Image 1 (spheres, rainbow, N blue to C red):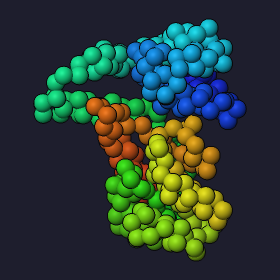
Image 2: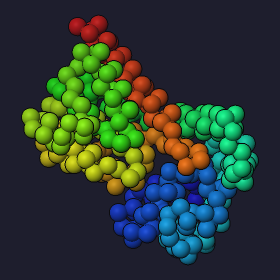
Image 3: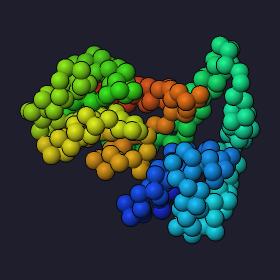
Image 4: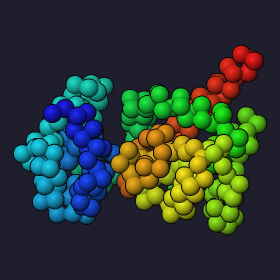
Length: 275
């Protein structure tokens, strides 16, 4: 079995998995490049489950055990993404070197993590969904943008950028009251652009439910196709920023927001030229 087939099986069977196995599935899907160097107990600890649960997870998808599943991602790392051949060595060093925290070391770790996040985005971004998302935003009567907590800077940037395109934008940030109060006139001609990552802010989930009930289109930027909020839309743009020293950056997500904005700007400009 290839990694691609395994991940497709994850997506198709996700809803039928027990709760613990869902947690493991989400971790595996969003940490594919790290699996080759992670021990079964590392995954168990990250998912707050027993090591036996990780083994059961692997066996659920036809593998003899964790090592058998791990080899699938090792093959992918060595054949599908050759530019990351040194990644396993970098991960091993990261896991073993916990002592140096001077400014030079922190700079190297965070910049390297950001570069890796950008490389992952470049290799995984679905261009069809990107184009469909830009089209939905271009055709929207009104664009609602929701982003709370760590997602707030990304949402704020998008509000600023889209206003420069003379789009009617409503910022749902939770700072001025309950976000749903500003969605009362939302209808099927509108679009909700939501940004949310684990643990998925409750306010953003409420906005997603309200938009779905209103018939509005939804464009979602999130961290996994297996996230508990992914079912709200088929326009899901995934961005996974790597974590360094327990700190997750916004490097790739910021870049994705800019890509989406520029795709929309280009689409609006070419439409105007046709007219």
